[in-house]
Image (cartoon, rainbow, N blue to C red):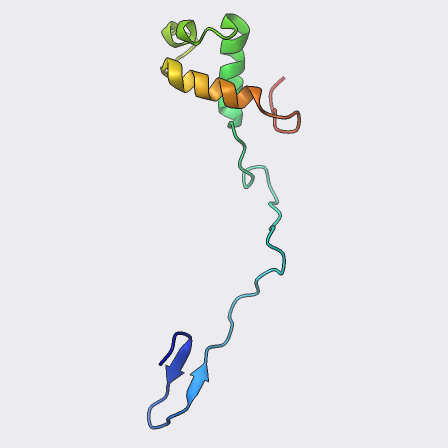
Length: 97
């Protein structure tokens, strides 16, 4: 039998499967809460990188060596990626003051 069809015993005909899910007509499904929407930089990382950017500007090497402020011990490259993504956020996506 083909995919989506079942063969019944004793009958030569086929029975089509019933559609079980109500799929929205639109390809875009709206997200209801902030947690469901993916931010390029999480709120926690936004708060984290803002403190480091205020103190060190764009010197990611110094950020990586500061073990008090960089308590998660991110490497220079990881901080650079977080910083770059943070700086590309639009006003709606920034969640820190």
